[in-house]
Length: 171
Image (cartoon, rainbow, N blue to C red):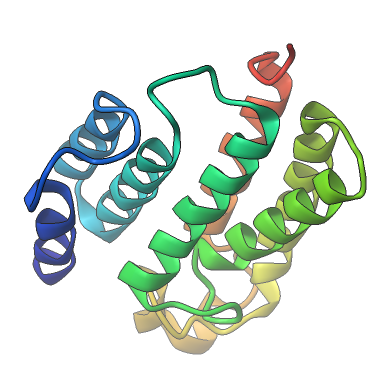
């Protein structure tokens, strides 16, 4: 975890002001510092990447939000090193971002694309019960992890569903 936090710090603090919203990196910084554990650092990195991707000159358009979410997901993959099938948050994150991008590109309005993607993430999180943990905290359980969904994937899916249900994505 400490190594992961060190990998995050240079990206947040080095160089001139980020191109994205100057205040939008702060939630990522706060989450990373306060949440603890590897998932806290990963969520912090994701939130920082999302904030960096958004403009401070105009409200975020739906396409900007989709792009920012993709960049947040890329940050988690880059920083954590997990891949689909490792029984981690990535097992819900990758299907979510793929479904969101595909449905939005096909013409679905952002709220509908997000809701569909949240359902995909929920199913993917449930499916982690069939996987032997290879990364994350559950890896020490090995075969004993089969039968229990991954907590990180489940938390990710719950959060994406909560955003879908919140009305935040409505115009």
